[in-house]
Length: 384
Ligand SMILES: *Cc1c(COP(=O)(O)O)cnc(C)c1O
Image (cartoon, rainbow, N blue to C red; front, side, top):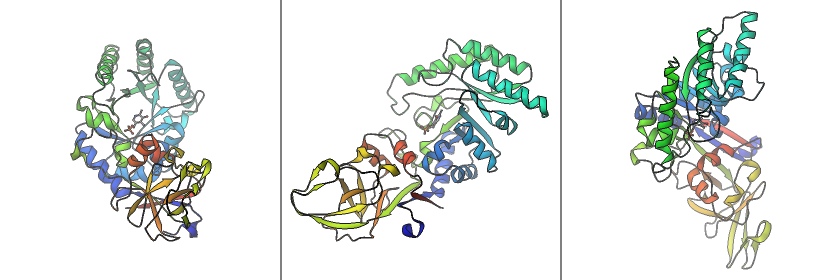
């Protein structure tokens, strides 16, 4: 680990062999449904282009991203496979994406009109582009997508555009609200609402190539929800999408390890209080180590006094508040020294916490732990 040489405060080690193994495992589990690997938000903090390449190698027939810019980055890097994006801002320029055969998601007729305008502009200047459009129906998340009230109108408008040869409706899809809780009644209700929406689309003459509803938890816990395609995010990164619910045989391997070094080690006397606000006070002689990452790098401040790191093979708890650039851990009795490696999280091979352990300590989800970590002061290292 050559942190000082690179001027980085921590290394994010991304194991692409784990990504490939997870994709292959998930692909086998969900077959005959196809796997879409979701690489939005810089592949949940793991590196967009590296993960995209590994996912394709492992058989991801589709990739999924949120924004148009993310799709553009993939195409610019040479990815030519099926690719869906689903979060456009008003007034965004669709033209290069349509030319590059990216599937774009449409939530309402205003978005469909923007796509149609872009097709018109492209045709004025040359190529006979047909926009690949996927329609999203909201089945109970009350987030993006058409309401069921507006669905018939959206479907009809899309069908008209398809008959004019301007678009091709390649997909109809929706998204679960509670798939990490298999006992929640909303899951069945959403599946039923999706079936109803598909029937409306079929009735209107649409014959989408893919129908899809499930994210990682949905794909693993609700086989009926797999349809033609499943959108796999967190599970690809080896993290449990539904802690406490996943069957043991799923066997995913966490792909991200975060490591740094202790910057100093010092002793505390009974009564010494630690970090801002003095939320921890030593009640005995203790030894503490200083870890040079903080909330500016994505360490959750809510992990104060709660999360653990691994030093010298031992789990060491954070003492006091996580600061912007640093936090303090309890290394009492470990003979720790300045420069000792510190593992924040990883697959757990050496006994280090997982991102899921951090999430539990910080009152959040493992998605947020890995996605937020990084930034200009850290360095990503790809292995495998
Ligand atoms: C992020 C996202 C996913 C992936 O969800 P996971 O729970 O990480 O598998 C799937 N679909 C949509 C629409 C998303 O935004």
